[in-house]
Length: 226
Image 1 (cartoon, one colour):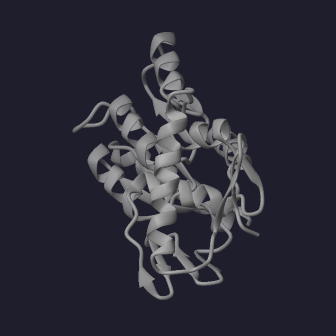
Image 2: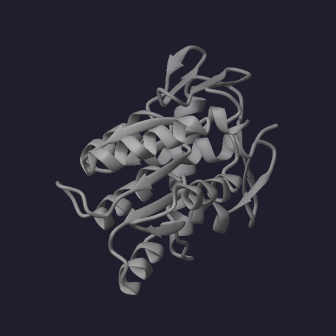
């Protein structure tokens, strides 16, 4: 997938800066989703696919750090902070919270574009907007999962887990890897939570299909059937 297929969610309340960034991103081949408030940005992210999020910390309705926390509960995509807050403590806090990069305003647009390219290199491209395998269909843009043309209702975390498995179809994903990409951290205690989520996904899918899509690699992790 090339960058013309990449979508960036820009959460920025400064109208002039938002227009400038949107123009620069579109000129460089990216699709852009816009939000001027944190809550609106989160709503967009919950309903549409974005490959990367550009997030301002100084938003009118929510502190950007709180928005970042919420993003990490519903998305595995990289987040680049763009903020006038230049203190080291702000940068450390954002990076510890799961941000992939931090750019201080005012910035050079060339630098921002370069940081976006670097961040996107670590993001496996979605197979397509619509993924089909045997009896399973996933519409990533609509966050819709169908098995035998019947809708499967997944929670946001369950959808994130299934999306991660599909992105890496055929590869064994360790417990550590999955936790880092879905929750942003990992602990031994959370292995049980991961097993519960995976069991729930399997149960919901298996009610409508006799196929096994997610395979357990005992003691290691999980693999989506190739």
